[in-house]
Image 1 (cartoon, each protein chain N blue to C red):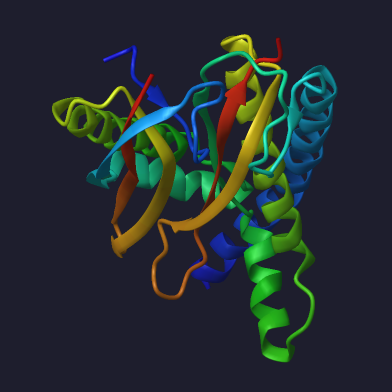
Image 2: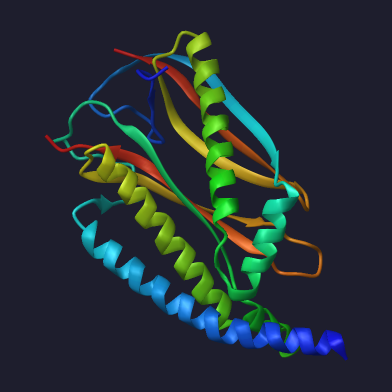
Length: 146
Length: 107
């Protein structure tokens, strides 16, 4: 009985704060993307000719988890299969945040663009029957136009 | 340590590679401490970023990169090109961060 009550409370907290956090995070990401839009991201290796000498590796990473309520819902969806939009959102959030952080690092060293960008995923803190967080890492080479 | 160029391109922009010195690598295996795990567990209820883990992985990756750069310097390189990162979880509580690239001498 106590267990159910605790689970119920956690679900309610998850619903309220989880979706609020998510919305705010998306707002923050959009704002940051706007701010950093002068640093272009490419995932090609071919460089233009007008580059200054040298380059630097820049990275950005983030570990993100979904809230308790969404894990609960996901448990149901897994019975029948289908689209798990909660996890789609989580991955989108993490990927965009990682890119933004990479751009921020590039801006700090005064770069104009990032080439050969790669995005990598790894699962973090997973226990066998519980879905943990996801780490998204974005990295690339920051260069300066001459 | 600071004047070595690290890039994940196959060349260093604007410079010619004179000599290839072979692969250099660096790794580190990190476990999260219990306090962080508990905090992350709490954060898991509301979702969002698990900042403790983000920092941990950033530090670990930095260390792996430093080791790779150290090896490159030992070989007499002044740049590391085509750097790749990879992460693998060894057990539920620990992950390995691995960085590797090719040490080269550029003009």
